[in-house]
Image (cartoon, rainbow, N blue to C red; front, side, top):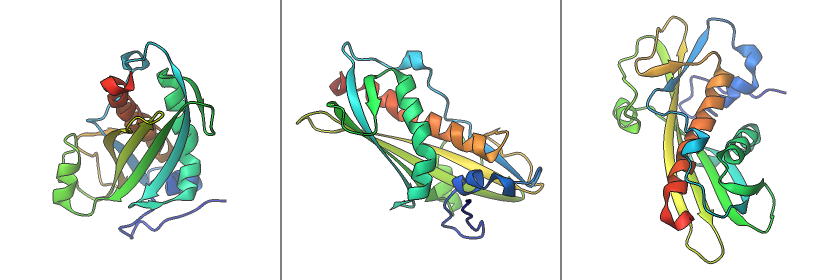
Length: 204
């Protein structure tokens, strides 16, 4: 069963709607671009604690601040995979495992104003021709262990979808498909937030 969002609406359930309904993406009708300023974080760059601890992970995807259960189900395996690959924890589960708690929230925000778009990420150059829709994403990770204060880190990303013959997106990295763009976005945005978490002295 697929779920479909209208591209005419400013408040779209984002590109996951297209990824989950991949059959709707006819060849050449839509091209996705990721913001070029956000890069993958190699696993070797995470500052791993001297003694790894288990962690319970809670994942939530939001659309303009409101929970989106179907999108959460879609991205959760991607988020879990990225956390496990980081090597920051001895055991990663979505249920209590006697360890700390890591909350990962990804919020899809509507970028409907050009000034807001320009300030959202530095890697994007606007003045795009044709029919192009922009989805912004904010990832917030909150790590708490025992009675210690939670450590909170945020990261941002964006995906452009160029419809028809809109041409390339300046500052964007072309993805082979919408599904690939979503997968890369989740991996990169979570990776950046985890890197900042690992660099925090309170995490050690």
